[in-house]
Length: 156
Image (cartoon, rainbow, N blue to C red; front, side, top):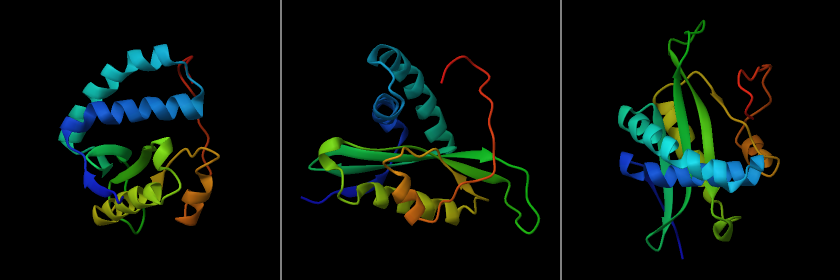
């Protein structure tokens, strides 16, 4: 069976929140209870951000069921020399249900995200890959950047 990609709408916010919880559980090792409590918060945030188009998401569907999603958070940035855009992006929560993995769906989601990012002229994209997904992102041209970070909360 083949899948189809579509742009997410604010009505997909709960699906995106559920997929984000799956990512945090699989990659971050978070327990189900705090993630379940977070889903309504993410759902409300995604609904507003999708509506404002500061969060662009794509959903893969097969047989009427959502089997994957991937998102792009668009953020304000200071324009750089030679590039007049004032926005950059962060790839978020690319997730494929386990039964649908290794079929090129994550690659297709990323192609849609990259096409959108280029069309709206984002300065750059960043992401935090899992070890399993690092090869996919490298094959798309992503490289390590020279940044550091500081968490200002006690949470991971």
